[in-house]
Picture 1 (cartoon, rainbow, N blue to C red):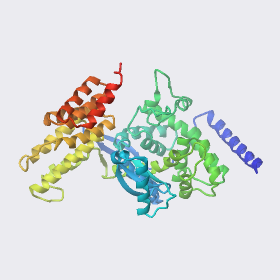
Picture 2 (picture 1 turned 135 degrees about the horizontal axis):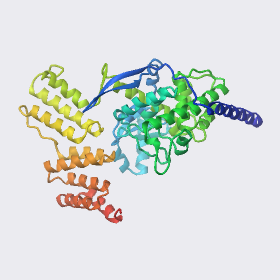
Picture 3 (picture 1 turned 180 degrees about the vertical axis):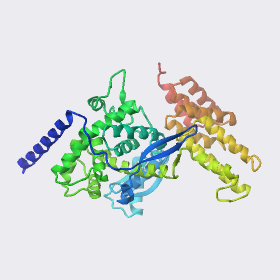
Length: 483
């Protein structure tokens, strides 16, 4: 039996080597597929740009959007980091939401007791693991990734590679971030490792890193897919005598796994599963199978791709021919176009509610980085003008409300915008300890120790019992100043 296993492994390796040689002499031309590329007018706060996106109808015609795993990740992608989802491991069945802050306050014993109570309430067996997943809305910035998808589709087409992969990878690897280096060294929108990028023709050294250039990075990713990921995936399926079409969604998802985990690990998973046919069932089995370096993060990868496609589709398909990046503008302009609610509800109370909701939309746009602080405040003033004859209106509503927004920005490392927000709020609420604590945190994140300490002290002068500022000051004073 062992000799048979060894012979099978050697044959697979030989097949992989032959595939490599056939793709090594020239740029491989793979099936670019028939997936439709649609064009939309993307409306920002200062321009309108025509962009291209992928429209994959098989996602819905085959029912992938109904699977619990993609549905779970859709929720996580829309969930802010101050909340967490409790789910069943394996099936990803969602049970309830909890406050991240309150969850982190609990001891390990308290967390286990809570998990047991959740199992009992939902008739889940004691042997089944219960997972807690923090919201990742701050990471999946889909509006920011649109320009890179538009440009990468053309690059992939130029290199004869299915542009579906460009959109899938950009939506989940590092959406909207051009220069984000992972803990293992991957960088750029396609998160290429240094050695991999160099093999695909990119310059990566101490003085230059072409992984952060969208055209170069897209070229490197397309070459990686056409030279290794796609042919290796075909080879492992051929070895298992599983038929496929390169345009099958399940085949594309399997290629994504090869891109993320490496073709060798995925080949090990396929050998372990011993499939007789492809399709949705095979991918679902891949999600439950581990091999070598193919573990939880690798199992999740195509789940994330499906979820991201669903969420992204909802965004770009909301209107017939345009994508409005600023939700606040879309809502406010509807009001201004008729000077009444779109639902034809009249009366000052209804108008106040509607315009107040416009402010909430603009806040979300600001938090998401779709609009800068100055544009945000200009729209707030516009709403104030409309409400001036209806009801007294002051923004920010209160210091705690704006403090929450500021800390969301700080968590996302948007320190410049957080600084502007806190300084504006300081003028409105000069006696707020929360605002000065927020300024202290902002300056600490900016590396300005003295200004951070000054604002922590102001916060403590107003509220001596403010434990947050006390702890922050103690930590800051215990660390040596940055040179």
